Length: 303
Image 1 (cartoon, rainbow, N blue to C red):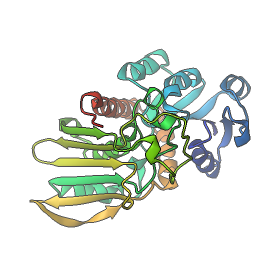
Image 2 (image 1 turned 90 degrees about the vertical axis):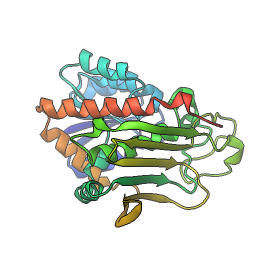
Image 3 (image 1 turned 120 degrees about the vertical axis):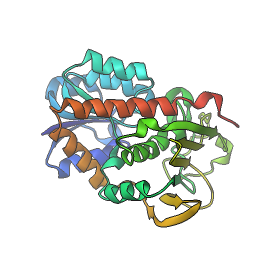
Image 4 (image 1 turned 45 degrees about the horizontal axis):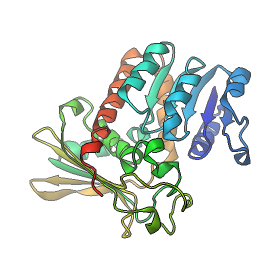
């Protein structure tokens, strides 16, 4: 197997996972200090294509352009969350490249305890999924906090993971859930960021994105509350909590950062299902559904 990793910030995780899986890994990053195999994509493709998998881990505003460029040279193109900017971009990718499979990475659906998560969700009428950080604004002042480049903040960074888990727990009927509440807030400014647990602060940069998000989805019988926060100044809380008739009725599950084994399971499963059109149709439906939910943000954001 041969894999291409584009972007060696978060992409380094894929390099490690893929090498453990026995793949030949080709890396691309414009920053030569990260020691990529190539500093631009065209030469990497002309030298090493075709690839079994390609992993797009560049800044969000480059996702579509990069995925389009590698399409046709890879059997599967994984695009890091939040995927591409619009539903139209997703459809263009698939319509223009019929021989390539595309997918927003939804690694949390391949956690080894996903079966227990599904079971507990089925037994509950209210589920709250939290991804709250004490101080983990990614690179304040860099592209991460610049809406023109990231398309949004925590709503594009963490919320897709929480929606993905909710969808996995309701595989047969997630489309029955309607958006009941979606509130985005920008609680912090660049001047508030004297440090962060993720990246470095660029004090002359831009900070104009949401850093707190609450989404409530319900089908009338079951409700999910998804809460994501980059900076609470309190404590880290990445967990799922289960309620029935207004009371906690099952022990919550601590999630923590997604284990690398889940990434490996995702890649393996996708390769196994490479020729399964129903599998990829389902993946695209999920990606479009996530895109529709997170794109509702503009009328609700508060400062």
